[in-house]
Length: 549
Image 1 (tube, one colour):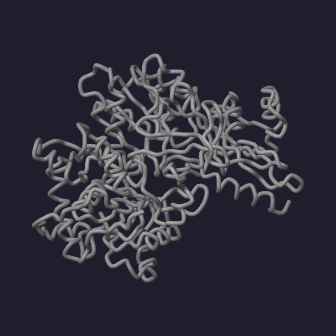
Image 2 (cartoon, rainbow, N blue to C red):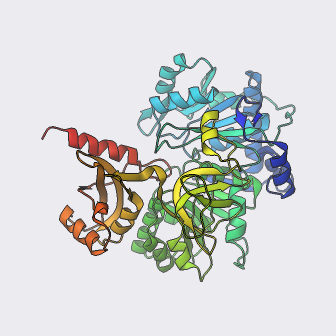
């Protein structure tokens, strides 16, 4: 363990630094270093597109320098934390770049969070300067910050964005036009970002990444996906609809500085708008959650559009039905869709199967392992053989270096430096991961452990069901039993529990895997990355059971 300039303890030592530096996995450069190098080679390169706004690397650097100079004048120094709770706006890119110039730590906060979550994250990270919208999509972020600030003694500066250019705004800060006389030397092994987990299974945890663990995430992916394609400029235009406050969107912000790539952002996902953007910008790749791919394919099919430029869609974050991957090959002209696996802690552990003869593997596995070491362990931490189910444990150069909470860090790594993901799965002979469930997503039905994912996979094969989520619900005798929440396919008027049980029974699974309750809903509560908030579904069924008859 090493104490970072920010004050956090990180899992870093000279052996690790030498290993990944020698392999070339750690470039020992910051995002600012990459940006300045690109500006020297091609100052007018358009790197980021936000609607009608096309940003060159030189423009972004100039704005970031003014912002960095303003923050420095206000007393921020290396290791201090700056947060932004912004949509997919240009200003997020500038803040990310400016903080890197000074060696500050950036703390992205997803815009859907409100007072309770934001207060926790700002306090937990020790944020000293915060950027936020004014009134956005019907919510007053400025008012929220005024409510929270008195109880956050470390928060010294609050800057609104796109809420007028008055005092205390991003626009006024940049408008001061202060020059960044010199950049401090920034240690590439220092913490660059604290990114909070979605909290699906508990209290959010601050994931610590350094400058070295971040910039190459998507660069390595694109190099792999383009291998042998024979297409000039392959994967050089990325459509990014995921929030820039999520690890996927964050990577989308940074890759244009580190690779021959342009990122086209969507402020708000719309499949119809995505069709137009893909064709207009000649988008070649996208990385997104399951709903994005599903809706894109439906919109393309209905409009009779084949999206000839799109060649890659990496899908993850939520359950990906195998049939969805197959449909991409049918609907789109040359797009290779596949499942990938990763998390904020270990982004893009797998990079999918993108070969023309790998459609089945793309649909039935969660991708081929790349740039990581992965092993499957039993409950005692012992490695298991290929094909055996256990907890997925990962280590590699893009892995985070711990949580803000040292106790959470200690509980998550083994003696060999493998991170225990909490996901259950198995390895295949092809070097792929197949996720079978979540360790904390097992339902204990009278002492028998039932995998929610196993039942969900059965329900996803039922023609009437578009998407399913199985959660535990209280049971007087057994302790827990199964409740299935489902979204019906368009045009299906209704579904009852008897119909579901008949379908499940026909698969021949044990009776303890039968759902005992069915809830038909319009949509699921989800995190920003598209994952189903099962904690909310569990709370919902508890409330329903407790409600007076």
